[in-house]
Amino acid sequence: ESVNHLHRSAFHFQPPKHWINDPNGPLYYKGFYHLFYQYNTKGAVWGNIVWAHSVSKDLVNWEALEHAIYPSKWFDIKGTWSGSITLVPGKGPVILYTGINQNETQIQNYAIPEDPSDPYLRKWIKPDDNPVAVPDYTMNGSDFRDPTTAWFSKDGHWRTVVGSRRKHRGIGYIYRSKDFKHWVKAKHPIHSKESTGMWECPDFFPVSTTDFENGLDLDYAGPNAKHVLKVSLDMTRYEYYTLGKYYPNKDRYVPNGESPDGWDGLRFDYGNFYASKTFFDYKKNRRILWGWANESDTVEDDISKGWAGLQVIPRTVLLDSTNKKQLVFWPIEEIESLRSSYVRMNNKDIKMGQRLEVKGITPAQADVEVTFNVGSLEKAEPFDPSYTYKPLDLCRVKGSNVTGGVGPFGLITLATPDLEEYTPVFFRVFKDTSTNKPKVLMCSDARPSSLKQDRGPLKQDRMYKPPFAGFVDVDLTDGRISLRSLIDHSVVESFGALGKTVITSRVYPIKAVKENAHLYVFNNGTQTVNVESLDAWSMERPLQMNNGAT
Ligand code: DQQ
View 1 (cartoon, rainbow, N blue to C red):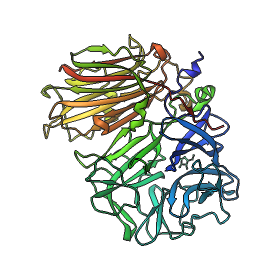
View 2 (view 1 turned 90 degrees about the vertical axis):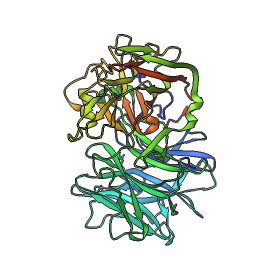
View 3 (view 1 turned 120 degrees about the vertical axis):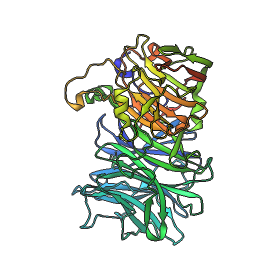
């Protein structure tokens, strides 16, 4: 088999060929989940972008439809960029998207289904009274894009947020409309933040502070809710979010200050994950997150493979019931329908330097859930809170084979038996010297993932193999911490402590592929760690993964 096919995913959303980026306009409508996405009709690099369109009944099996939106009118002739869908009572679904006009100015447009009774929503009309919003002289016409799903308020107005910036200040402009056609910019932005640069793909939604099973729709205005504002930072290519309060009468959102409002804030995913967007699933009352995982391969290899980019497995989003200070994410339950061969491990002590193989499943295409018990924290390495450690720097210095006290322990994915190639996903437990509480680091380290040679010194000629990392907010009072990894050839999505910290890595092994890939649990800390339980499944390819735009 050609090396070009070794890295295609089996159960992730990925068209047969060409480039994909942002998920657009996710929606549940008349029995179908809809996913639109930024797609290059002509190649495996960014360009020639249209809104490709696929539908699914279960978020696992997909069917491709014709492109929904593509440049054709004066108001989008140079581009049809990201946006969202709002279900407008009496009208049906309405797309808001960014069009690029002849002058390369970014403007906001709308599109409506030709036939709202068609559950496939195959054909879209872009009415001639577009655009609905253009940048005025105070605004930046080349940084004004990605309208959010609109919400309806008691005052009879729809509102949407459009990402922008003024110099280095990231801005979310808010627009109001009574009829979903005429939109007026509110006096103040909903929020802005200095030194964050352009805010791409903002997402704004409520989460319940009392119900930890169901999501909330955007127009929820009752008690016991917080709001989430997420932005994607063009400058750093990662996202951050804050929790806070939304004041509808003032058109303002105010972060609650419990986490940084800036590039060092909380993240939906600490790895390769961008331009994400949530939607409310009317079928199961959940809020579901989609996100784009770009390639980390060389551009030349993207081109020779003929494809680039995939969407992560959709994740439910809830407020963390244990601390109410962050969100938690979990792969949608439907993905478990792909689980087949199964192995289990119980109550196994792993001593310092030990590595146990998980046999009997297909390690390159698997779902693994493991619960560790670390026992005592006595041997945990000290963590000096006065020093502002960045998780990534800690992981860089303290990799999976750097001996610690409690940890590093975790999974070794996509590995050769001699560890010539491997992608470790692991925890390292420190002890905060001021509080004596545990400080847990989670890493997904792509550095040892591949022996493939870079093609040259330029960025585009090198694989991107970073030691992605984040802290995990657990107190370990019962000694337990869990880890789940979804492994799919070139993508490893890992969920620490039931989704408190999530990290997605893209990796391109050349030996640890297909049947030659192995999976292990390991411990390189002096403290023995107990695997209370480990459940692992081979994952099937969906019967229908015809998600390919044609
Ligand atoms: N991708 C789109 C933009 C958006 C960016 C263009 C984020 O609308 O800001 O393909 O990845």
